[in-house]
Image (cartoon, rainbow over all chains, first blue to last red):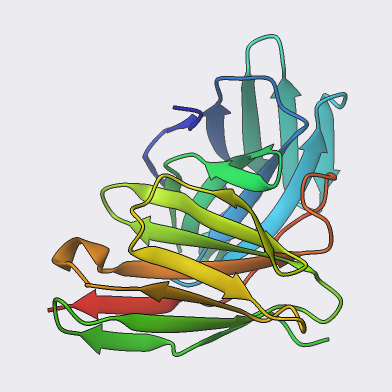
Length: 109
Length: 114
């Protein structure tokens, strides 16, 4: 299967703390994307990192990509209760996205 | 700019029936993809349409089909519904997939088969 894996499966932190989620994938990629899903609703695109990039920032989000290890991490700094959601990494193969199993993040206020 | 619109939002069907779900992409987006999300299998790719042509299909039985119209709107159909088809069906649109572009998702259609 091309589907990657994410860890941890679930993460519970206090507001203000940082949250780190990891994603691994199996084959070479053009890019890796991170999405957020709130409570069974649609997915919202967070950030896209290309295969020739190693790190990317967007507001409180920092994504790293290590193509030699076929892994990526998403760091959310200074978390807020509103960050409570499921986070998915996705790799793009041609014209389809292959998603990881996701990390459920709970931020307690 | 309006987002991706999926209708209906919720649907309850009986086993054996068929269902049609609709997706209107963002204006100007020519690619529409469909995904099934279940607690057990996660997010799985169903198919992708570009300019009315199906370019890619996931590993789903032939009961799952779709089409895209000239205005880029897309429908997916599931015939002979099974209990296991209960899921959140998500539609995503993009300008040109496979070119380092993001996908924009609708809110999904929650299908329950009883």
